[in-house]
Image (cartoon, each protein chain N blue to C red):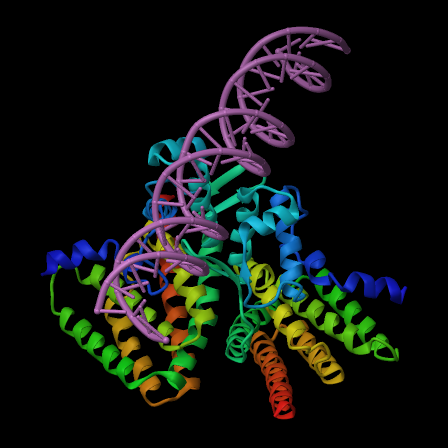
Length: 242
Length: 242
DNA sequence: TTAAATTTAATTGTCGACACTTTAACTATT
DNA sequence: AATAGTTAAAGTGTCGACAATTAAATTTAA
């Protein structure tokens, strides 16, 4: 049971991503594999991307590969220069800060809208999820990792509950792959397990009460706290390095 | 002088867009022309896009055209379905509302960051712009249209002043083309000329004071008021139609 | 020896053609 | 006449090759 959970968790987000459609074309498959490889660091951040090499590696034509690259660019995982080529995006502290600022704004708004638009079914579903998270806290092993994915799942459900397609596309479609990339590459896979859970519970309560204003404030604080937590860890890391 | 202004204004945003690079490749040019055609309504909203037809019309290969389509999809001007094709996005009232909600969140944050990060040069530049807007209010002809572009220019400068590349890409790179499309297709080219100017002035003052919190609140109100204004106009339109 | 200029190699952008899927038209059956 | 099944047409996805540009290597000049 738990083992299966871990197995699935590795690709949790892509599979659970509501904006993530089943791959039908070969360009889709190449895109997904490349996305995974970049997010997980198998293709190093900042490294140059060679179209002929990758096309051979995936055994597809360059046209197909370029279609996949085009989508990677869409979610900011690579950067392209005309007549020069593509590079995997670099993970900088400034970049991390920028993403969290965007998330604070967008997810705050999503949370407000969720409080205004959420259906009863969605609320029940969300409460069930939080209950599950509460029980899993008792487990000794894998708490951090589960909480990590649980955190993402919570945020996902809130975003979906906003019923705003633009927000859903922006957050789930493009931004979250970058978020995951940063978390993995900086080794931040256990952010504030217990505190985060309590914050989730408070946010959900505000949503249930239909208090959009409070829900937005709480979500922004939640994300802001997560950002500060990561910044602090990075600071420690750089101190130890010296 | 004024005539030249008008001439430029027609393509104001694309040219002034900081994320808008000079077209070097032919796919770039096709993309820009298609973008303009869709935003201006020359290619009807909701209409199907035929790759062979457009390729012939622009005298390029389908590969080049598809590269251009890929970028149109990136800024949500078209929607693609695998093995079926692309359609120009439809302008619905719900869609308009969604965009304004996203803008309220993102530009609010951009405004907060601008208050924290703006340089003296940027402040001087912005004050000069507002002074120019104040004088142009005296002109009899073209006030509305100028204010329209002036409004966009103000928002642009605020977004740039946030110094957050993610925000700049999201807002200037993709979202604003949709915003312009909606304004043009719904015929909303003169939103609250005088009121908007005063609001701009207040926002700039908050930025100069370094009061990020207030700057964000004012910007959100400003965009919210603009949204309500448009919603009201649409309501009147649908009433007259009956 | 260094720096500039030229040539070479490699990579990206673009093209036309083919394979597969979807949609439309047509035929056959109830 | 209406529906189901079949066939034909159109459109999208993919491929390999050529053209244009950039980066590297070599040569030449100071």
